[in-house]
Length: 567
Image (tube, rainbow, N blue to C red):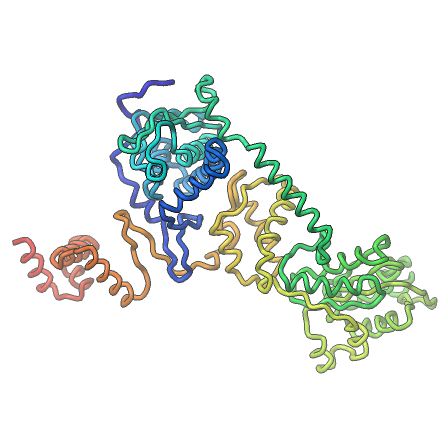
């Protein structure tokens, strides 16, 4: 083990500021009962609650397993804090980044870190610290609940520090309490695992998965599989959703799967009508046959009919050979007609004949062909209104609307947003060779706050964009998901460097809260007046006339107050 060094290495400035900027990253969203630290949602928790959690884990799992659970949980938390710091302070020198990370523990109310020796070089993946942890919240609650301690008890803090630095330098770093005292503070050494030369093997087991916990997870997975086996409302693998509205839509569609009935899928653009149609086909007796899809709005009117019904050679200029249409290609299977409301009048007439008679005529042909096709149509327009306007045939409408199924928009199935996002991250990440660490809390909040006018398709596009913008291994933040200001940004009040809430909002509300806080803090009137005068003069860069205008005073009034203050 390295001895403690008497001084900081070059570049370390323990007396410099930074707490103010870190405190400003803490925001209180009073209207939504939320507290944010950067991209992470936080909570204020009683120290007694932390003590209760530790005590119950110890009583349930025993000392060793309880310590392992808390250490591994904190390790993951430390990695997230490191990611936040790397995003917030790009290009900051290594020593300064580490110092800010230590100050962050003070902002979070965990402990005060006082380093004795520090070495860090992220480029060379080198790290060593010898620190004193003072005012540890974990040591405090442990002593209160168990009447003191002899060995290490700062399990959460050790795990967090190890996770934080491991994320910074890209190799596993272990922090070990070599002295632990609630009054004198805890002495902690931090080094990469290899530098411990076996002295930390006893600590390493707390960072490794517990076999008992793994067994519990495996059993839970088996239970989930069994539940899915008996759940009558399990969705096909193509469909993702657990919301009641989405499951009800699929349950309705599934009832028609075993019949040749024409199904009309209704819903806004991007809700996943084609995925529904594919799932319906795969659940039908026609699953082994072809599934053919056509977007009726994607083709010009003069090409749409030939694409649907086929064309004979010489039927029109450019028809150099005979070609089967989509109906013939789907014979025995399913034809999905998306945006069916965009069909021309002629195509509507021919489609009606196919639905009634099961027969088609190729363009320019004289031979009638029988086809056995199950039609699934979809539209995002009101076909009944189109019938009233005369733009859609009434008889075709009734043929298509035998079995309508309404697919809910994404804003009405918000429970499914997280599931869909995870699936898209996995699918697109595998396709593009991109790996990320999931979503930040702020990103999840923004996803749920957005109305998604483009529905599932818009969500998929947002995830694809975010994967491009997010660094390898990092987590997706709200700014990567949305162009411009992410949704769900409510009025927030940041904390200033003195630990006070810097209130924002309307002038009347701000003034009222400011007055309440000044009275509660016992701030004298002359102190407030002096602070206002000095701030105005500083903002006006010494121009007394400009400063007076900021305060709503005349220049002579301001000069009088300044003179009176200096007497």
